[in-house]
Length: 439
Ligand code: ASP
Image (cartoon, protein in one colour):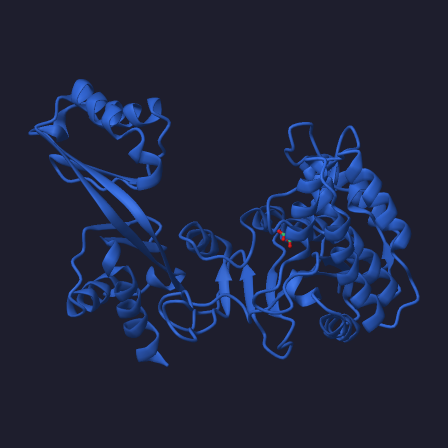
């Protein structure tokens, strides 16, 4: 068994957390490749080391004194080293970092030191080899990830390495300078390493026991999703559910490597398994509910629209010319509605409306703002009758007016448009009928 194990910032925020991580790794022989994040928050109001590094570097870039900030970062690591009773020192590393900051080696370089130093400690603590991500993960000069080159070098490098720690979040450009993924990018590193070694499993350890059926800010203590497919996950994360970096899915998905989201603070929980496809029936008829506020809908009406060839293309071209992406496009016989993100649309709204008047001469053009979309996602919906009916009656009982309904032909999700102010209640009503009622 070969497993890649990635630990998020809160799992590595203190010596105590490191010890939990050590126990987890030692309890399974297969946990051979470890991807650490930088130390995260130890308590609610604490600051992540990555944020401390960004702030410190900003001072360096402005030519201000940054020694206080850098010492505070050094103290975070020293606290971990002392708590683990390791004999190593990071003093020389911090001297190099201070020099590099003065030489303005870049924001990405600055942020990457969080993972680099945590990786050094982790390797020492576990007795694993340390592999600098700069030597095995590559980006082009524009910061785009070079998947093929990375996979080739990484798999060659790891071929003869039994156990290693590879820091997450960064790599190097072809000119040797450091480049990072976007925030939360250690998830992506883990996935890339899992692909390179043909791992049997990519375990992603965090501070929750997996994906929740819905947002815990709306439903207290929601149920955990036991198994989810990559496609379902994509639908839910597009709609705002976050646990895993979006780009972490692609490398492993193509190889059919499952991802297991686990909780460092509750290792006995099985977490969520993310797989390509599964025969396992979802625990509830639906897999998850997610959603977002802040949409606007442009409603276009024109008699005989249905027989006017090219109508849709002309309308969408106006959006394209204004560089506004559309999210959904439900249509009737002589009507068509375009859902857009309100914040992106607002700036261009008058140009778009004028453009549509010119392009298709509609009978009426109406704009409705402050809408929310709720997505009910689940592979189990396909084989079940009456799901849409149950959703609509739940919303009717909760006195919620439905503005739009969109069911993809994959039958994997049903998207419902409601007013922003009905958003939370809509999610509660759907959760109650599919989950609470089935518990
Ligand atoms: N430390 C980085 C961040 O805070 C990357 C990560 O944790 O995945 O975004």
